[in-house]
Length: 295
Image (tube, rainbow, N blue to C red; front, side, top):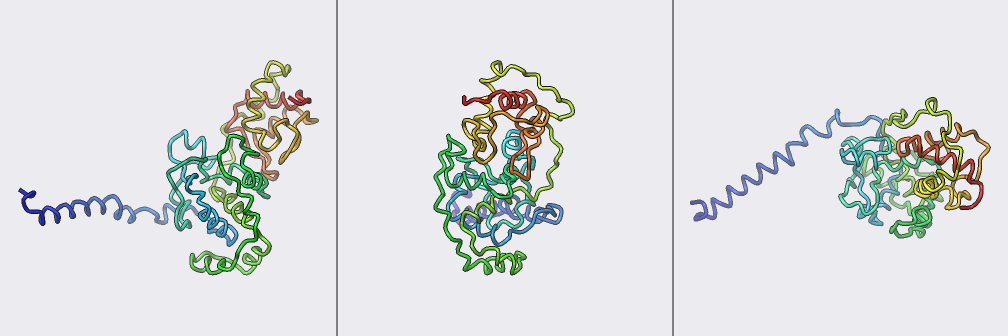
């Protein structure tokens, strides 16, 4: 008979909605984001990183890139870069959060783990001309970010957000560009996480001998792997761009295997042991050692 008494019906409907809202939206805040959820290693943004985050939002990067690695095994493998799935403690200093739901481009929650280059060379090249490192990308160019950074409100932002900073931090903003700021922000993403250095991929001591001695037998697949994972930094024809030329090498096969598998963090080269199996790494080694001419 409630349908004949609209006032009571509206009141009861409101009560039901509020109960559901309280249970699903309000009550959970009593037991999440507490001390147990915090990650001690996660630090507030520096002034330069915060300026970069603001530019990231200004340019609408969050319209195409999410920042949350779901618990699905496929997502963790594709976007975790060793940091696992996203946890609430990672975002304690994000105001607002940029989790998003649309992935026109890859998830960037842990992108700093994928490209550890302290100079941000890959990011710089990618931002200026995305297709120069990812030919199939539909991302627009952001070369216009090579403009002086406006620091008029930098200190005010840090105070408002209650992030610690020093005068030296503010002084470091002098002479910086918007490109420097957004790269500093992306380089931080995921890097505060306690990531295990142990690799789930092939271990060098178990694979000292290259099973491939004839380039012709592996050339097609090696070139395909190279085009997908290496060309963006070493050039389409292995001529060298961000990374060195890979047309031959004086290094031993085992050394090349170790470099590809474990990466060189100081030079910005990521480790590929989690992405390429032993067989694929050896095929790349064979291509580098024996493929001395243009292909």
